[in-house]
Length: 229
Image (cartoon, rainbow, N blue to C red):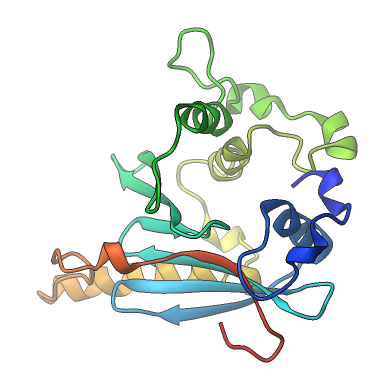
């Protein structure tokens, strides 16, 4: 989120349906706290975040988590999806795989290049991330006050900073979770239950190959004030 996102833009998209990316950023910057709801599904759960809009509508973001480690990320564009897959390597590390696809048309060469550049900054060797724990993810305090609220760019590296700064194994007795962490709480509950069930010979959910991945949609839309997400 940038400080500039607090400036009202594309207000004509404040109506039921897909809003513009700029209006979405404005709404997220203006109404910082969301009402969070978790809905269990056959494959895992849906995370629904609801925020008001200036015209009294509801800005809805729906992310879907498919057990054990796949997350569909809300998109402002119809037919476009992003998926994050975190595959454990050992007790301390995991692979982070990011997939983006668009069902109605392919990405152009320019769009592919833009996404690669915005997802991760690399050193000249092409293998080492430029923003890392040993350089404090190049946190820019001046940018925090004037441009980018997190002080870290690109956006994906903000996620890395949050997860990596916790260390490989976090002492959860020192956590202070709240309502906005409902998805974290729920996925831990589900994974814990799945592990206990496996000890009893019960196979974990969403691992039998029958998950309808092609029908799962993560959405970012506006609905009317009396509509249900």
